Length: 398
Image 1 (tube, rainbow, N blue to C red):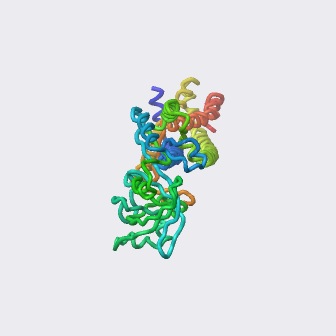
Image 2: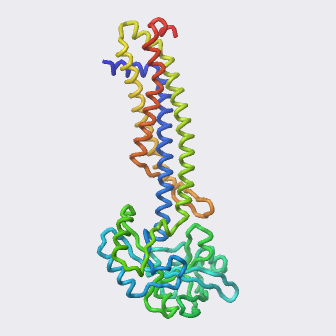
Image 3: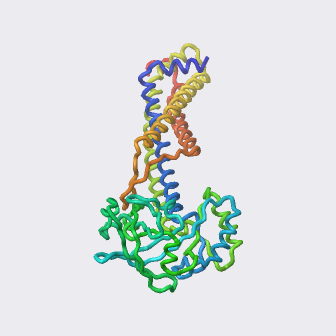
């Protein structure tokens, strides 16, 4: 009976009730979308770093301290692979060889940093031209290709585009070779694309006249939640000759960027939550205050204080539940639109954007719902106290 009275009373003024529902639902949707966006930024940043460096890397001790001449031998590589192949948490194990030198032709030349892997196609792909298929093919960063005036030739694929590579590695002496540029790739970061080239690992080893070796072993996990346990396990099995670095140690900028981002997130959250609190409190308090005459009428015809309290609380709960459901639907609509419309986020200092994808977390959604519910309940305290305290006559003539 009380719920029925509360429901009918809620829709006495439909325009007012609809306005309150729209206000609460938009506030809740804004909180869910904002939390989804910030979670996407943090997780997306982690995924980007892991994609670039792997979940962790294994190298000869001293290599990570800029002693790049300390390479892993064939025996080292086989030993590490044997230890990793029985771990079901490991997704991918790759050998990576890094070296630097000068690349160019008769007219232009520039320093470069090269990454040599066994399967460049799966890791780097190709932005323009063709991916690496033949052993004498290489990929140039898009900006590097432009600096060497090779970009248009690569795009048009009118003929063979070759460059000369001169480099040295691990005391092998100065090596000089010519390679066909099959295509370019773009990371979105100008600094990287202006000095990076990619080739097959076997091609690089042949150029330096070296047997199988690598700068480090890159390991990717199915789930980075297992990172600590996997590193502890492999560290116990490896000899003191090797050292292991996780992706956070390999990307020291992550702590600074994520710390700055978390500070900005907290700042904007406090501002947004404050304005939501003020707006909802004022609107709901006004809405119930304008209806004191209705509560005075109920009190005059014999409704007890307990009945009035129950009716008001039922109204708050019903309008909150309706608004939360609508707001949740609005948040999912925004997420759907961001996917369909291919919204992009372009980080500062980069040319290419990342596809915006909202990540909704159950905990954040529940916390936002609890915040909205508490605000709505607090907003009913003042009119509730007036309803209990004032006489029917005063309430009806309020």
